[in-house]
Length: 99
Image (cartoon, rainbow, N blue to C red; front, side):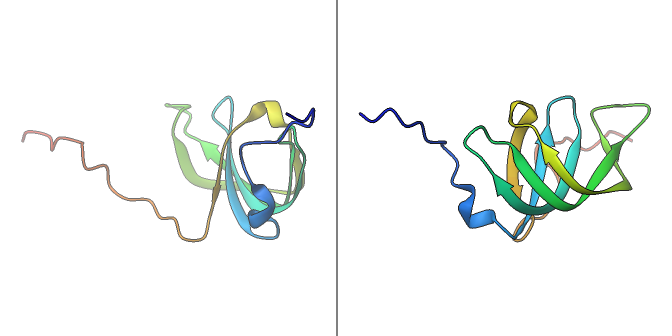
């Protein structure tokens, strides 16, 4: 066994591609992944933050805020996913409301 630690994620395939990052505390950011390290610190270019709803802080709105070039600290990163090839679908488990 080597003394070198490796991350579970292989982020090399996402470099220079669009990614969506969810952070602890509910913040959500999209941008172009420019770099990363073994601690999952991410460098995103052309980053855009999706603002949260004032009534329900766990929900994001369609309002955005341009951030530009940012560094996401690895300890705050919860999820990294590509933006290409993903789309939001309706929740199939939600019961229709009775009228």
